[in-house]
Image 1 (cartoon, rainbow, N blue to C red):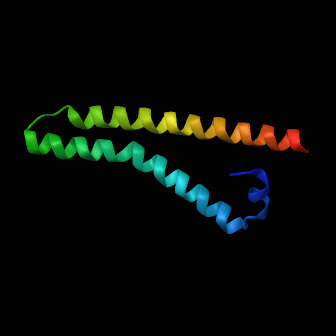
Image 2 (image 1 turned 180 degrees about the vertical axis):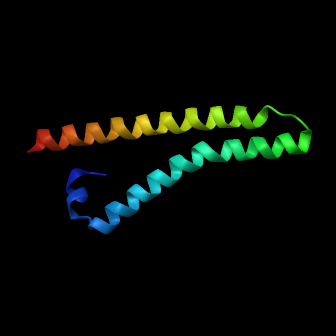
Length: 82
């Protein structure tokens, strides 16, 4: 989103954007573990829950790092325009 549009948004819109981001990362971390647990129960295994959690946490942290880099870039662009 261009910096000019960012300044025109209401605080509620910014809050909803962050709620959406946090919810997405939480689901990315938890759903693979839940899926692994379901598969463990269905197939009689005992390692897919752990594998799902490891994959989920890895994906979630990667997404958090990408969001952080994007926020830093946006801040630098905003500072350079001022």
